[in-house]
Amino acid sequence: MEEGLKEMCVGERRHLVIPPHLGYGERGVDGEVPASAVLVFDIEMIEMEAGLPDGYMFIWNEEVSADLFTEMDADKDLQVLASEFSDYILRQVNEGKGRLAPGFDANRIIENMFSNQDRNGDGKITEEEFKLKADETPHDEL
Ligand SMILES: [Ca+2]
Ligand SMILES: [Ca+2]
Image 1 (tube, rainbow, N blue to C red):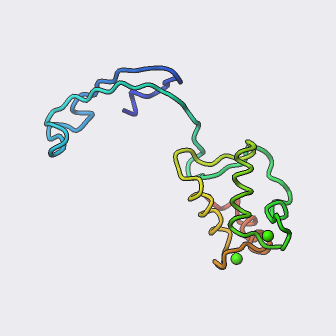
Image 2: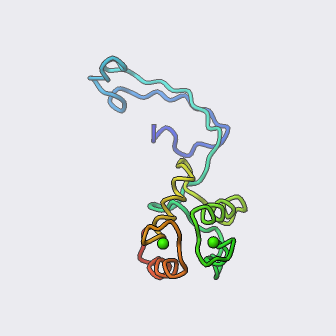
Image 3: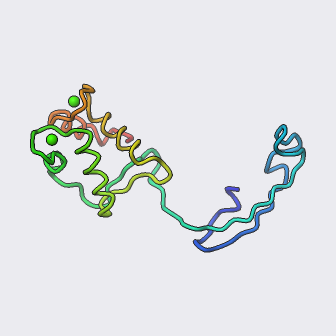
């Protein structure tokens, strides 16, 4: 399948015939795929979205704002709540300033990003927590 989808373009259709040795082999899958089955797929590429670099769930398309924390803190109480964080990230994505990894649940990714920053797990990010995290970012896979 991986081989058969290579360099496919949007709108293109392919007829893939996968021999048993590249499919489920001589054994097949009990009750689902018979032994030595040849698999046939008709595939049409409807849409294509570029992935993110390995290990990344969110990237910025542009320069990151110098004052991210203040921008995220919509009500200016010097704390960023999960809702403020999530609204901010989703807005960046909608405006094309950032991208979330395709094929994953956006809310889930944002929740993870938030809990990553919320070091003491009290449900809000302080400026201090935010800075600590930012200082580490070059060494951080995510
Ligand atoms: Ca706030
Ligand atoms: Ca916190």
